[in-house]
Length: 370
Ligand SMILES: [Zn+2]
Image (cartoon, rainbow, N blue to C red; front, top):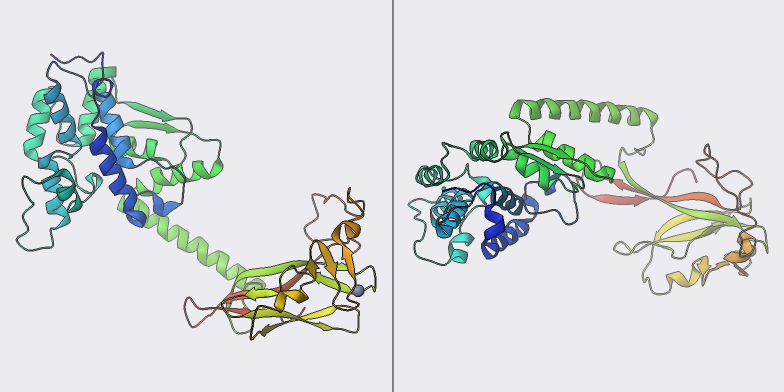
């Protein structure tokens, strides 16, 4: 007799096995299904979600042992399922035979993840359907039939803090209706992408890719036309290094404020100042023999400005106009660069470019027009 007033998960749950499978999924690193779309901290392993879903949908019977056997068969975490997963994983090896009578770990190490195969074997489906009085041939059909029996409709899953999307992605993949929401917009985008990109057909995906490429090309063309991301050699800018600049109260020179003059430790690239006639400094990128002494000439040391011209020291607090920052002002909505009379100006002093010919190689360049 099946009892739908209770769920399998309320009576038992094979924690050790689900843990091992979850650990295995986590260790798969980049080949995990959802991580490719974006990082999310604490994203639930999909096998854990699948186990919780079927654990909640499954009724209980008088035969606890049989209930557990059926549950493990659904998740392909029984020997029959593990053998199917091991054979799939090793399908390229000639004459591969999955081991028999070994520990769970041993065969698990040779197996793919449950989500990589289409579900239980035919033999398992017979056992599952007989016990649950269903006639499913796929996991989706099973979830829907169990939902009909328990609720009178296809199961609906909701997650009001969907995060990385596992809790809605996996039930959707199992044929359930899903609803997800989150306060964090990044979580919203990730979950949307899980469902609409990973969950789309090959045709839809090809269409999406074509659209993405079109947008990417159009944006690239526009940026190229503006001439802001490529230099004279055609190298593409990767990032821009800015510092603040302020006037030394002692001598009136405009001083770039740098707590460290090192631009790249690996390439031993450092900033060198050269005085200009207009009481400012040209900034050159030079290769240093040794980085040890370089920052003794940094222009910000111990929260004070050290002027490279007059060598006098002024505390940053004094430059700001005291503790309450009397010389500072709030930026308006329309401000995106400092105004001429602001005490802090911005100074672009180096750009890292991706080499146009040597793919992946990056180079630092001095800005041509300082
Ligand atoms: Zn000075």
